[in-house]
Amino acid sequence: MRPNKNSKKTISDETKVVLAVIVAIVLLELMIRNVAVFFSGNIKHIQSIPSITENLFTEEPEKTPILFIGNSLTYNGIDLPTFEHELNYLSQSNIKAAKITPDDTGIWEWYFIYRNHFYKNNRAPKILIVGFAWGLLNDQTKINPSRLAGFFCNFGDLPNLVKLGMTDNSKVAQFFIGSLSQSYVNREAIHKRTLALFIPYYRNVTQQLNEFSKNRKATKKNQQLHFKYQVLSQWMKLLKEQNVSVVFVSMPLVNPYVLDKKLAHIIKQAGMQLFDYRYLTGITPEMFLDSMHLNKQGSTILTKSLAQDISKLNL
Image (cartoon, rainbow, N blue to C red; front, top):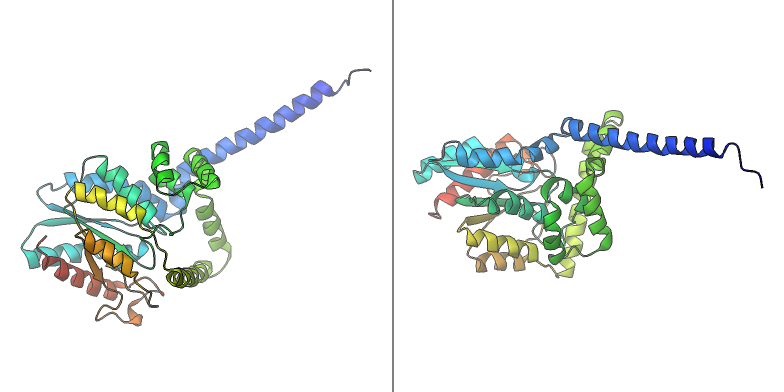
């Protein structure tokens, strides 16, 4: 049988194609790592978490550090200058507050943010305030393995994740891919950003759909009544070890949601505080930018109420 004269050329061409694909992937990855921050203010905020942490403890170290952790509900709902002014006045104290509030996050992200940026670095705020809604503090909150790996965890956190319940092989695989590729981690942000450029009102419509989905899932979960709080319990252990005073705040929304009685019991048993602001006096539907996020007026009312309630605790 005669050898194919074009076999070497064919192999060479295939190799070139493979190399071209690899180079394209590498270039895309490098580009995403360098420009992802321009696609999303949320990514920029996440990347600033180390500096937020550093500034809370090193700038004006004579002041008492207070930390807010949550998502966009807390970002919009809390005005830091107002909170500092009110609490300093009411309690005759000298506090400094900071917010870490990445969008679309819940208990899984919040636990690892605190564990990796505070607990592991032997840093602890005097008071930790956690803003939440729906079932964002229970284990059934949707876990995004690639996002955890890309933004909030490292390889060393995988055993802890598995111990806390992330045992599905596909989720473990997503975690590994997310640890290696920012393109994979940011695929949703890039997708949404691109669609928003070409589709009018895309962000508003998707936000409303997400709100509807969350309410529907929360209602379904409330009917099941089988919530687990293993991640929250682990977080509480770290906080108790550091002697941190903790306040959980159920944030107000236009559409009411059910607050799990089991959660309230766990918080009380841990010696921590729960402020139920779902129906906070003075907050009206007109004070929301949408169905979830408070406007400036609503934020001022909530912030002042929170400062007043914290001042009464003598923490």
